[in-house]
Image (cartoon, rainbow, N blue to C red; front, side, top):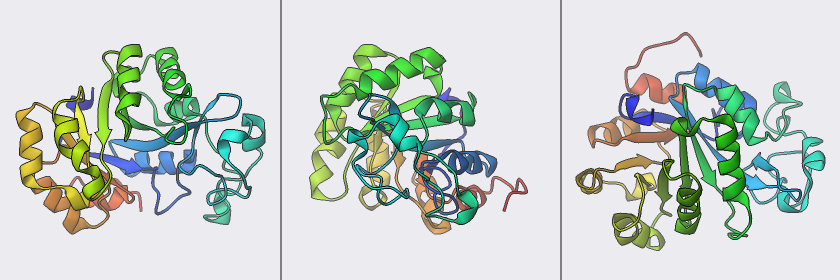
Length: 254
């Protein structure tokens, strides 16, 4: 399914992040309405092993609560307001379960799930995410990404056909992932930062019959440059800007 979208695919980074509270259902819904080909999100486990959508290790920045998400139950997390901090019109938005995102986005868009168990890489996050994908029978629309190759290896064992992407941190620390780690790993795509992306890198990936999806492009000039380099996918905090930069028309959403 992912290969059916015109290139470059546009993925809304944590949803319509500039105009809605990140990683919430309103942010994902707005991104799709504005013409994104899909969304990118981050997942973690609660203390009682539910898969929630949250970027930070704590809830402090994006809710009205405090504390580490991994030490809180789903019931406690769902009592928090994840929208009012951004704008009072989003009051009442909750930290979503991954299943709720699946239902909100629907089956005809791409969902990039970053496996974000970096503080506890041996927990059950990958297994739980794969179980959810199996229940929803939506593997064809999913990209599983991670900075940890071990997460992607586990995912491949549970869901052999799932699309897997290796994330690379910016700068020298991500050099191994952008070169040897990617070239000799079992991945379908590399996800580098815009600061470490080049036309030559894209060409190398294409010679391996793999894709490059870059994060995060937030100006029209950057989007156009990446398109001209042959990027297969662009993640952005501003999907409507990217839609317009690529000349994909005005769907009436402002």
